Image 1: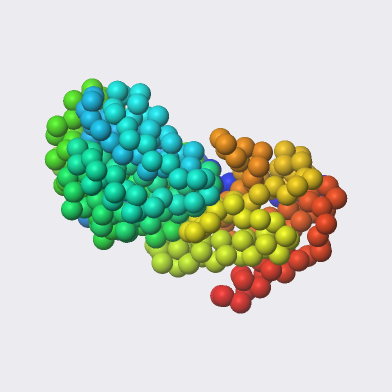
Image 2: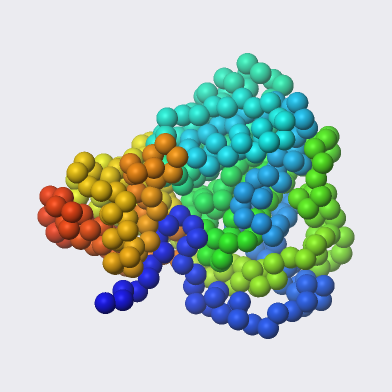
Length: 384
């Protein structure tokens, strides 16, 4: 039997039909008033999701392109920055900074735990020359969230600029850019925004702009100055180079759906699905990987003893049509991850849990069939 395919990874995510349909429309030229009106609408809608009045730029890139733009526009060779990492993608900040000759103070917690704001405060006090603090809202490799609100309160009184990778978190968990004093926030298209990969969004505070004026790293395609000039020179937004026209059109429809559901309702939907997934895994006797502030977008679970993790992943994907995510880096083969992000609903959780149960059962893992599904449903249906 060919099962319905479900993409339950922390990105890319499944795409709503009305968003998919936008890509089928005839292409329009990016310099026309028609497209520029759509782009202007998209920028305004994105600011509402980011909860910001800061400048917002859009680059035709994956989220990592947005991360690199932050490094090249804020830093100069020889600068010292602090990278606060709680997983594989947090470590990417360090890798990008080192590629540009930037001195990096790398702070990394045990995977599965979140960043300790007090440790960031301690390091800033010990080294007042730190120009930028790079960190992550939601670390998808481990399924943990960081306390950006507290980190923002710590960084704001210092000369340092706070940069947050919210690529997987934006639209899935609360991120209040201005209220939480985040100077630069980066998001990606293929996560909570429910469109295909290829757009990176970056917000920039006045504090960040002041530091950007001093940057000595060469930049061209990712120049914030060029992008901002095009975006704001006239009443209708524009871009310095050819934008991803169809993706912008899809983003306009995605933002319409987000506003229709309501951002707070979306945050609660993700939180409910996360609680349901965690409850289901525990009901099956599985151990959760993330501790402290587990993610609302992805649930990370240890592969139990005696179970072949690679076979488990492939069975769920190839036999039952549900693509989950495996572990990355130092936890590769040790955990699997259930994505419940973007265009995901209660029934996707139930289906994923049932498939996990069945695949575990087929490997001889001892469980009570239906226990995970029952636990998931108890959360999903009692909290609505």
